[in-house]
Image (tube, rainbow, N blue to C red; front, side):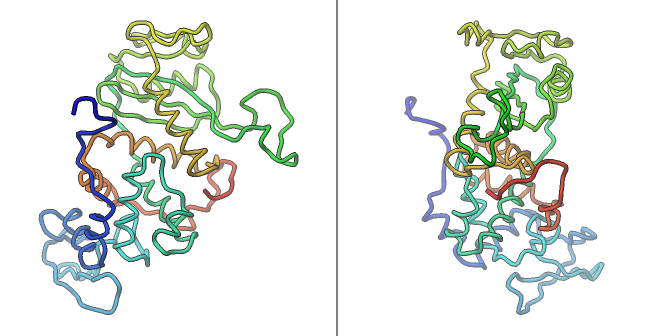
Length: 322
């Protein structure tokens, strides 16, 4: 069907199929093992393939390396490291995060998976680490834009109002870009939206030979090193031939619908994690669901996020969990 909505050509996995696929610990573990070690189990410490299986009372089966004598599981040296949650719940969490375009709140995962909200909150932030990748410079054409994330002043309690003018008071500045050809996105928090910051972001993430499209903001006017065109939103101009920012605006739209409808708050402290999540999901949205899940598992190796690291001060203002 050429007129089917969305990514209709993608092959999905229904919720019933997901439950059947990951419903018990044995099948979930086999699924994780196959995707982490497609060519056979190897020791995460010494990379030896001389592995024996250890049967014990632990929830997740252990493996033993006959080379360096290390004991390990499929969780070792991944975002699941030291997690007491069953692999079946981890697999279902990966599935829910890959198939919900607007994300899944920790409160919903707490109910759907039957775990505490604290565990669900830690779990979702660890899943976001999967997508926290440094992307190669985009070849373009590239659309660049900035936006602001945060609640509206008029909706805040009087004790929380900043009592300063401007529609962006109390909000966090974010800059992002979308590659039209590769269908890739990247976004990050910025402290300022001046020309030095925004143009520096473009130079860091866009290939010099790429065409760059922006709006009429003053910060982009002196952009050098690229072929650059812009549209003037202030005068009602949104498309001028190839010049438009519809792709990045669509990305912002999905992010903000998630803010309002799913999370209700994205604290500045963790906002970069949310941006990594939405960029990552955007970047794999054209793949079949099974391929999305396989890519997520492949990227979980070598990453850890302890609860202590998650709640530690990172220099940004903290906020309520969401």
